[in-house]
Length: 326
Ligand SMILES: Nc1ncnc2c1ncn2[C@@H]1O[C@H](COP(=O)(O)OP(=O)(O)OP(=O)(O)O)[C@@H](O)[C@H]1O
Image (tube, rainbow, N blue to C red; front, side, top):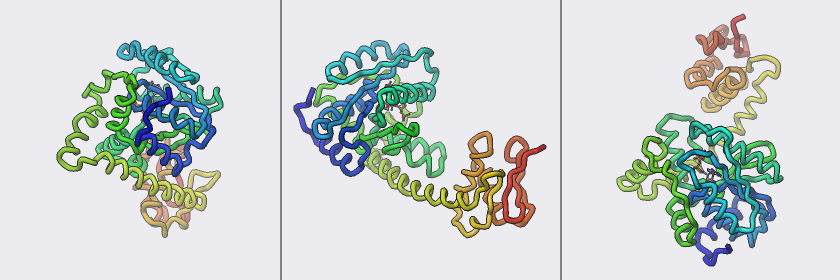
């Protein structure tokens, strides 16, 4: 199974992992393999690089049980059995009804396998192309900075398990070419052709149009934007955490507005968003955050209109407090 070819993608991944220590040597790693080109490429690259990094690899495949996936689990099992690696195949008991339900189930299953195997890391085959599409999708739908960061290299799935995406600086075209060159048996998913799904339309029509008419490197440009925004966001989140520590009250649904008054608007909004996230039953929207942010500088006794469930926010001297109907 050791690939006879050492390609530029091997070198790129090796260098990436030296710069970003997300997969240290000897690490136990659970590789999530869907059967598509990105995760087959990921598995082969990790297997080949494993000679240098000495990882302990395990493979997981989640079988949604959807009719259009018939034969996929066997296909993955046949292929992966050629690597001397443990493979875990999990089948859904109840068919997930939506993509979002399928994703939630998948991550739950992957997390359980990782915990059972003592793997602190799960890796997926998300690429630069996925990152570009996610950024564009969020931009079109409207989002704050958090939505624009789109698919970070690493995020926590639980306190003990990290999700790592090592292929974020490779395009789908590159993983496709790699699979061809290495004769990897890519499963072609009919779902990917269905233009009813916004994601597929972006991938099949919008990105190619942007490449043709605006920028042939649009995927790289968008993915780099996401990368820059991620750095900015990490910094803002750190400042927000510090501001929340000085302003929030441990006991009561209120915050001290005095230390916030001299902060830039971007931080005021973030502090207010975190505050409302603690107390509102759903994610606060733009208008709610703006209304409460204005109270930071407003005269005493100013108040918002009803935020949700009869709840409002009001200025009480140095505090902004949330009040619920009794
Ligand atoms: N059925 C599966 N079994 C195991 N891993 C999977 C499965 N489906 C997807 N993955 C993993 O997730 C990666 C991304 O797949 P895909 O783009 O189809 O999912 P997605 O739902 O868009 O992901 P996300 O919600 O995390 O952005 C794959 O490269 C693979 O590593």
